[in-house]
Length: 381
Image 1: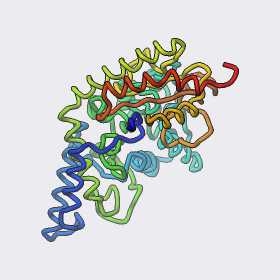
Image 2 (image 1 turned 180 degrees about the vertical axis):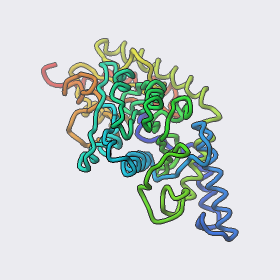
Image 3 (image 1 turned 90 degrees about the vertical axis):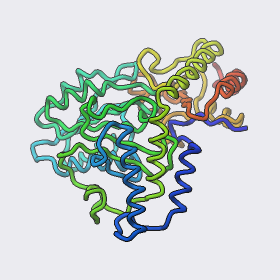
C-alpha cells in the first residue's frame, strides 16, 4: 500500500471534487462566451466556481481572474504590473525564500531596467516585516511576499507587510498558493492588491488557478487575445477544470478549521516520533508559526535524496523540497537562505500531510524510519 505525504507538491482529488469534475465533463460542450443555451450553462458553471473561489479568500467574484495555475497567476501579476509601471518606478521587492515562480519572473525584469531587492530571512525561515517595509519607497513598482513557504511551511508576516505597502502606496502581491485551504486567507486584512491561488494544492485539478486582483489596479494582461476574464486574461476558460476548482474551494471552506486541527495533531505526532527516533533531527522553522501540515527536517549525516528514494521504495511518497526543483542537484535555496550550509540544504526532507493522511500512516512511517535512516546515512557518519 502506498502512502502519499507530498501534499505541498500536489494534493490528490477529493471525492467531492472528482464528482464535480465528472459532472462538468458530462455537461454539454460549450464555450462560456457563447450566447446559446449551452454557452449560458457553461457560463453558469464558471461563475459559480468564481463565487466559490472568492468566498475562499473573502474577495468579491469580480476580483477573481481565472488562470491555468499558480505560476501563471504570479507571472501575470509581476509582469502585468511592471508593464504598466511608471518609468520612475523600477524597483521590485521580494523575499529571498519566495517560490521560483516569483523569483524567476522578478529577476527576468532586470533585463528591462528593473532593480530586484531580496529581503533576507532569519534562521527561523521568517522575514522581518520592518526590513521589508524599509525597502519600500517612491521607486517601488511592486512588493511580493508568500503567505506560507512551500518547503518549510513557515508563515510570513503578510499583514504587517501589506500594511506597510498600503501606507507607501506600493501594490502588494501575496503568493497564497501553499497557504490556501490550510489557514484562513484575509484578502482585505492582509491589504493585498494581488493574490495567487492554485487548484491542485486544494485537492482540486491540476491546470487551474486564479489571480485575485484589487478593483482599480492597473496592469497589462499576460495573455492578450480575447475579452475573457474582463479582458484581464485572454483565452477560452477551461470550464471543467475551473468548475471543479470551485468545488474544491467550497469543500475547503466547509471544513477548514476542523481539518487544520486534525492535521496539526498529526504533525505533532510525527514530529514527536521523529525526535524519539533521531534526537539530533533539526525541524526547520519549528520555533515560529507554520502550516499545520508541513514538516521539513534534516537528519545529521543523512542524504535527503537517498532517504526520499528509500522511503519511496518502502511505499511513502515524500519530497526533498519544492516539486518544481525535483531532479535538480542544487541545494534548497530556502534552507540556504535560512543560513544553513549546502550539506544541510541537500539533506532536507519535507513531509506534507493532507486530507487522506491518517494516524495509521504516521505510525507506519515512524515504524519503518529507523531502518531507512540507517540505509540513508552517508559513509563515515
